[in-house]
Length: 282
Length: 267
Image 1 (cartoon, one colour):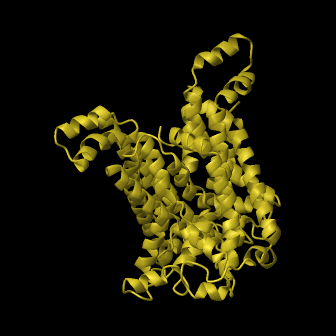
Image 2 (cartoon, helix red, strand yellow; image 1 turned 90 degrees about the vertical axis):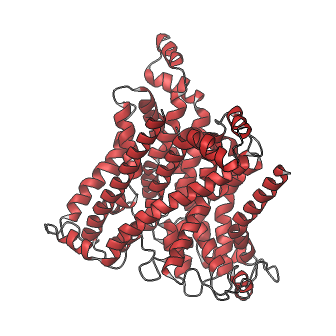
Image 3 (tube, chains in turn brown, red; image 1 turned 120 degrees about the vertical axis):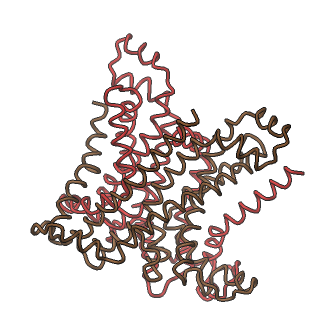
């Protein structure tokens, strides 16, 4: 009985969309006239032939995995640094929350204005280091890397909060013993600290991969998928196919299903891997 | 010595991290020409951006819509998620199954539900409508809230509820009178997180609610981009005004948020 409202929610947000997506994916469907006639696998064929979509699956996966790795590394480093100052976050606790609660659209606006080739905050910096006129959004790799940096800006502080909490579980006497044995900072971290925070770190990676697959807002604001196809990630491509330009809901639905399978595969592999590692540690 | 070093390193990192937001603040006090001059600081403080943004775009409407969606959907999320978390944490038979389903619906990117929900909302006449956004966003955030709350319920000793049942309280009464008050810090944290998520939400808002009178801040400010003559200063001022209340909330509620997030997310 207590689960009833959640059941209705799941019905509306999980069951109904899945069923409707299947119906759309196998029919000719436009925004104005969905479910016109059965079209077999046509939509899937169109989707698989679309260069932008095929690439977007790879880019989304790379973005999710790289984003998780970078965010975990930076977030953990920051947490370790904070931990050296004691067991309380104090002011840092407030500051760490701020990127997390900044609307991603506004984060995108801020970064876009800052990186603008003319009048951006960094134009002077580029000149000072001898690469005047540098525009990170001008090349595909640069734009993709910029999105990863923005992603790190938004999420690394959150990872820091979680890892910091886990670091509090590392017994001081273990660290002191390691130091007595002559272990340096890096050795103490890998041998003593990391094994203890591994379950948390892997949970964070999984969560961050899931979040990375949802990336959409900053792309719309900062790169609009460009230059070329370089920053078209899957959610953006599906949005473009269905609600912009083509208004081809059938193909958008087929793309959504394929993307859903990719996300499912990647997260399942990670979930299983995490369970193994955690179990192996006992 | 080491403490001084790490503190100064942290200060440098904090300042570097604050640059995008500080630059936004600086732009908000400049004319367009002053923006194009480059540099970090305004050459002359220009105040008019803050007022003029209300004339350039229907900023007051966007603000109102964003707050309606944020508060409305956070309340909806709470009403659905509190009893659901009670089930996932306590029911041996249905708990795990519900938890799996809820988790699955969180893992699925929201874009999956976008197309079907568009047709559903259109069918019941709730596209370009704040109520439609409240319903969709509120339900979409349920998994996050359940996930955060589940841990709080689990940490309650079952004895307390059993004592309540022995005293003749129904399950509903014991949930409302015993469990809810005891997990209230968790509920505050979960509602705040969902408020932030709803206020920041963009994909559903831009897909379902583009009309001028139903636009939220995220949609309205993203459309600034498409404008041929972008008013940088006004866009920056609008962004600052959109962000500021979230920062105030986050700082005021820091205690609940940090404990809620760290307890919930990494069990």
